[in-house]
Image (cartoon, rainbow, N blue to C red; front, side):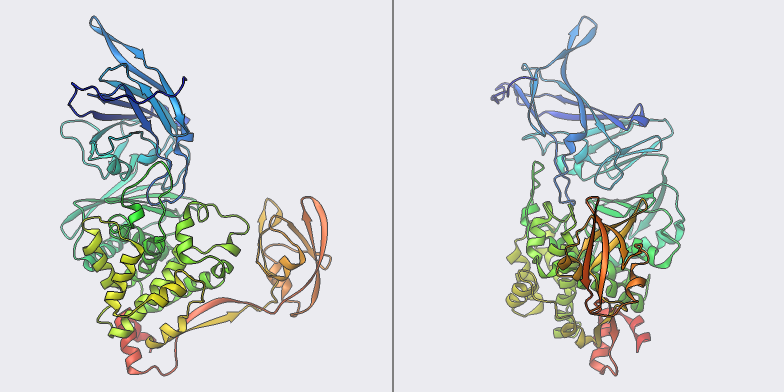
Length: 602
């Protein structure tokens, strides 16, 4: 490596735009190394600026993808008689994700490098003897200033029988070669390469594919039928599908869960044996509904801070509560509207979400807009104090979206709803991919609701006031009730790790925190008798509120004992239930919101 190369002007006589080509090979998949060749032709500058993305859209954390890059080389091909030889080019690394290559005014440059890929998630790369999977942001360089240039990608699979599946179109007449309109499209189009099963189906006249890697206990026909119903419901909401072809990539593993949205595809990861159990299967379909809904909300209806992606650093917006929280609100509703489950099941799922929200102490500390803005440093980096100091914009955004929908529906007797907000955002911003501001979003919601919501936004999006669930549920004949624990409150969450009972969380203001117990301590005994993570709740049932107990722990290998006064039981489970004797208006409102299956609750 040498000193930083000063950028130079483009060569005046060269007017042809450069062409960008990548070749991805995996000759030894057991090493987890993708071998990437980048070839740039018709290049007209004496310095080639290469930058590696530090994050990928949809996953708001700087992940430093360049840390997996090794064996970087740059060269040109020099013709010598009938043969060509590689002529090394000087290069230097300017920053963690920025390389500069001195081209010596040659117009064709080749870059070789390898990417270590052994992290199975929807946002990273994974290569082993069973398959290869990659995201563009975690595999490809971009040329600074040439992000709008078309890019071709050729894949050489590890084995001849491996198939290649991606949303990118194939280049006619070119084997295993695909075309991306620009760098954003390349980043937005993951690849699955291997012996995965591939299932084709049609919805509303458009082709769809479901690629599944890994074994599991799914019923493929049932899964496809339910996915088709989800697509039809969401398409009906927005009056059409904004793509020509769509791909679902599904990875099955032991306990994983997650999804990442793309314009013409999505990546999903789910537990392989999570399809027979009713609740787990419904959770999977909610994941599908969530990522598919992102076709509109996030991939096309985008905040101004995400209108143009900066791949070199954080892209801030206070509106992730709408991007993810509103999508989370609909991922429960869509399967209901698709007839996959009924209103009783929907209310049970909603109750679990409200419970998660209500038992998170951080809801009294972090406001929703701040949670959105600070996603880059907080949500994806949880620590022992996260539950006390943070509030997920997914979860509270879902709760706020619920209240907005109920407000609009109650005022307009279900003749308007949050659906109208989504449609208006689609027509005003999404179709032409114009970034919206927080004020734009508020204006659209207010125009649909015909209500001044400044106070609502101040209290619940930019403030910390408790969400008044029952105030909004009452118009629909529903109420939220809480069930208290049977045991006195101590304030610990404990998990068994390799035979040790490790305290994972200590709630702020709890008896345990006041006494001095710390997350990371090893719980040993209560009143001199050994206690386990699984047995803690039952042990506490032997005591009464205000009883004094002695709790023994190892704190950094030192034996400590704490005298703790137990507090009264806390509410830890919430349910949305029907009120007694709802009025006809309340019943009509509820049917208008949740559909005919709700009539079975009356």
